[in-house]
Amino acid sequence: MASSQASETSQASESSPASTLLFGSLEASPAVFVTTGAKLALDRVDREGFVALGSLGGQRRREGALTRDTAVGAVVLGYQWFPGWGVVAAYAGPEGSMEAVSGCGCARALPPRFGLRLHGEVWAHPTDATLFTATLVTGTTRMSAWGRLAWGYRHWDAYLGPEFAFYGDETGYRKWTVGLHATDFALGRFHVRVSAGLQIAGDQDSGPYLTLSVWTPW
Image 1 (cartoon, rainbow, N blue to C red):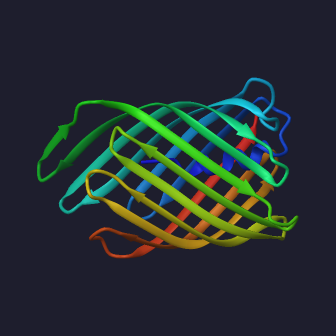
Image 2 (image 1 turned 90 degrees about the vertical axis):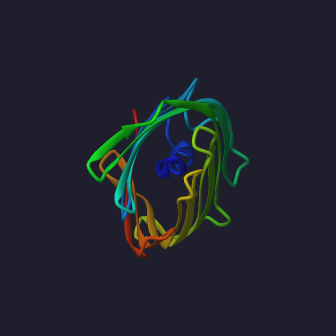
């Protein structure tokens, strides 16, 4: 499982004088994903340089008659660049996961696993009124990959447009989502992204999804 919130950390880096950024997200769909974490810069998150990203997430999904609960945490170090048209960031570091499978009157906890996470993202402004984002997060603990592509046009104080995301891991679970997003509108000191659309997940029936992401400088 990878964090959908990860893709918001570079957007906030473009305009925040703070050295720390807090974030969290919730995805409600046939499977539920929750993530929280923080981004820390040596100087400021809106300047080029070394940064650290820590996150902790949880996932629950049905697998036939069984339910799989997963907790994943990671601390990655990286560097962010500001080429003038946006932000590019790359990270690498350790991750760990714990899983439990329950159902049919039994429950089983799987041994903790540890591995490597790689994380890359691009936030680009082709024009002053448009935004293109690309994010890819891979991890070796569960041989997982999560990616998201989105485009938006600035309207009503937010970037509005389509998004596409994919997730898969070694259990054979695959999930594709296609929808619309409203990104970077402000609620007080908080910045928000809301996404909604259609999810197609492995052998499960297609269904709607709704994602809420929030981030704020600290």
